[in-house]
Amino acid sequence: MKHEFFAPSFDAIEANLYVGFSEAEGGEHYFLLTRQEGSEEETVPNRKNIYAELDDEYWTEDAGIDWVTLSRNQFTVRFGSDTITLPECDEVAITFSLEDADFERLRHVLQKIMRGYENRLHLID
Image 1 (tube, helix red, strand yellow):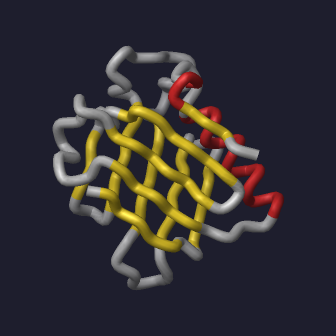
Image 2: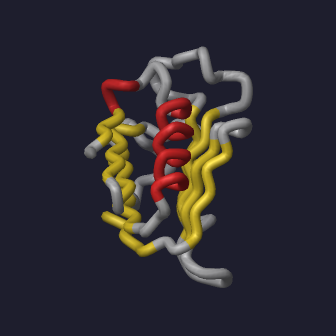
């Protein structure tokens, strides 16, 4: 199942290796992707150091990410068949509208989260 939503709210925190998107306050949907603290330099074959959460219903410590794509107005995460705790969600697609500085911050933090897994990160200019 693919989950899609527009996210007017966004945050990217380099110190916490965190990116998050949400609908307006009280909205139904949110998504976050973060890297376990202290694991920025560590890569784990099955990605157990990346955490994903969707709408407080689906979450996983092993994000099982096939790929992450970031374009100027969309963030998409595709979960693989090895994902056990997101069985009803194989893809999250979030559209957004960000100022240039915020987009660059998002790109920068996402690259840090995906360090060591660059082959799964697709940045579209």
